[in-house]
Amino acid sequence: MIQIENLTKKFGNAISLDAINLKIQSGDCVALMGPNGAGKTTLIRLILGYYHPTNGQVLINGKNPIKERVDVLQNISFVPQLPPPIKLSLEELIAYVCKSTQVQKEKILHFAQEMELDIEPNLKKSFFKLSGGMKQKMLIAISLARRGEIIIYDEPTANLDPKARDNFHRLLQTQNHPNISLFVTHRIDEMRDIVNRQIYMDLGKIINDEKI
Amino acid sequence: MNNLFLIAFLDVKESIRAKWFLIYTIVFGGLIALFFIAGVTESQVMGFSGLSRLLLMYIQVTIVILPIFILITTVRSISGDRDNHILEYMLSFPISLHHYYWGKVIGRFATVFLPVLFAMILALFIGLFKGSGIPWNIFILYSGLLFALCSSFLGIAFLISSIVKSSEIALGFSFFIWIFLLAFIDIALISLMMQNRLSEELIIGISLINPMEVFRVAAISLFDPQLTVMGPVAYYILDNIALPLFILFSIAYPTLVGVLFAFLGFKIFKKTDLV
Image (cartoon, rainbow over all chains, first blue to last red; front, side):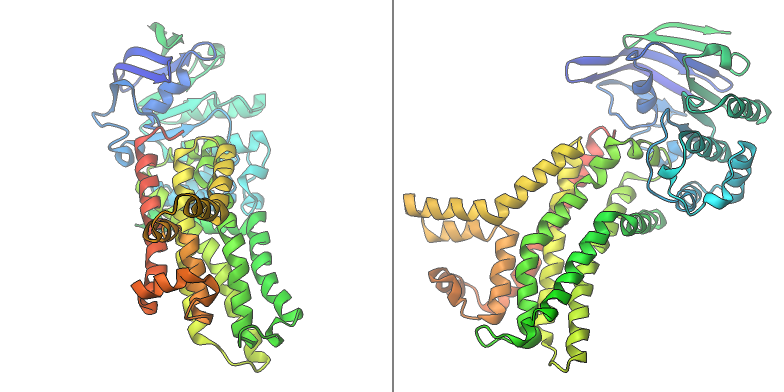
């Protein structure tokens, strides 16, 4: 369960999140929506323990993601909006993932194949040299292989072509659903078959939170 | 522990592929080759010739270029990863900040220290091949001094990298630190001494806070044990500290500075927003 209590985050004088209260329970599949600057990414970064809250707290299964980051992140899979220019080769990136999370390499290769990413000939290639779509497919394959209790996807299909999007949605639907899924998205139509809750944010506040 | 060495190992592999590492290795390896080609081993200064002369020249060049190389390549280690969102992704895995940070420090230390050490070993091999005698005392002392210099500037660089959020500012800051320690602190001390007639204890004390100055004096001490090239300051140093003790200090102090700065950097890295 993700429990957010009175959470405020300020950067200088700018308030990015304004006293947010939110509870995301097991079985919730959430579409997190809102315009640019609404505070969606800040919220995700607080959940992942990257930011120190100005006020309030975030608890993941009762644990603080800053103080107990290893325990908390053991159960979270994350895919960012833009794949970062990681200089490691795919082989090294896979080694990093496998050793830090105990995921089997075969699982990653399997999901890469499911995402129609031809990974074998590219294993020695630097991650940043792949195309935008290939990078995103790779990160999705890693996240699916991890089978996190909580998955957080920040605009996961932004760089994908329509076929890859279909593959991604198919894989999400055929997977045993993780306990909690959190999708940052601007396209609710695409996610309608997957999500069961919609949260709309603006100016650092939750404007609307409804089951769908 | 496994994750610590995993991060260190991956950082080394990443660095080896980077262009800066290639240039770095070529510069230091090339220096040695250049010295041999230029006939440095055949020249003589203050009774020094052969490999001793070459290593002396190598260390004099190293003192200028090694710190700036370490600073500009290392300050981007964390701030650069933060800038381009690599940190955001890599830290989404269950790796402790302790392992991530110190793994980066270990990996980066290996990539900055080993090429300069190997360049000296290369000099020994070429010297051996040419039939020169091996000056083991100089080699061991210089290895220790290079280790200490690498440690201190690596620590400073990781502190900057943790404090500064943007890699551009980190680069500018590191250039300032380099020029300040290389020249400004001496110029400031000389002018202070001339204008205000401050006590020599204070002036020399401030001067020896600077790891580059300590390195310089220790390097000179081996070919000129009386430190005559330094003028009256030599009397002060040698009257107060025995030379072996000063050499020990010249290795221990910069290493300690590096560890302290790196530790401070870790505290800041842990206590502030990561991305």
